[in-house]
Amino acid sequence: MTGKRTSPNLRGRATDPTPDAGAVREFLQENPNFLSDNPDLLPLLQPEAKHSGENILDMGQIVTRRLSDEVARLQALHDELLANGRANLASQNQVHAAALALMGARNFEHLIHIVTRDLVEVLGVDTVTLCVEAAEDGPTRAPMAGVYVLPQGRVDALLGPGAATLLEAVSGGDHLVFGPGAGLVRSQALIRLAPSRISPPGLLALGSRDGEKFHSGQGTELLQFLSRLLERLFRTWLDLPS
Image 1 (spheres, rainbow, N blue to C red):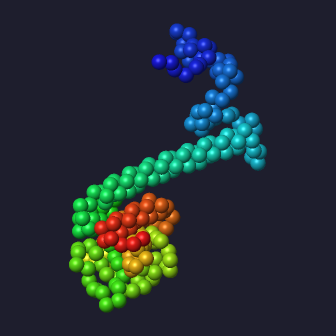
Image 2: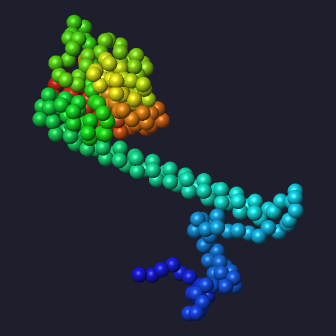
Image 3: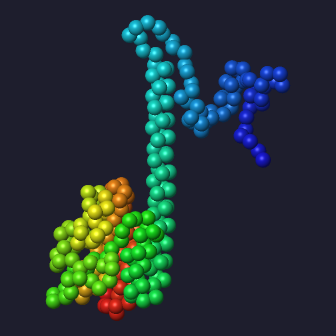
């Protein structure tokens, strides 16, 4: 293995491994990018004040302080980007696992069970439900657990006319959407479902007791991908036109 290239003068003598000022100066001249490649060292620099007395500013110290603040800001930004990247990767892996689970359904009833039961663990939420608006002269209650029938026009009322998704923090979910689990919901993701031109609109509803799980600033591409897959599976199992 090879280490970083260093100036021979920095190796020091056998009896005194600490380099002198001249060796450090020579090393920096030979490696002009060293400090920019190692910005964590800048806050350690302590330039001697060139002036003394009141109302006299030392520009060297001011510049160094500003450089240190900039390094700290860039480091915080770097850490935030890494955290967001890890969170996005985790969400992507969850949605991919959910998609594979949905495609493994043996029949329509099994598909509903996967959505309303298995996806709770796969997506790391506390409740998942399916909602569909009532058709004219249709049933007002669904025959399967985790599925709820909404009054006509309720999807647009919740999401906004034509809107595809709604992610937000709440003090409790809608009982029409989440049923008995509504009280524990502190953030929710509601995604419109439109399986067919002849079927009423519906919702895929995710609820979490974590108030920061879903919020308006999040991207919705992965959740919309999941809902589009679910629409295709509904059309397949129920033999619906697109």
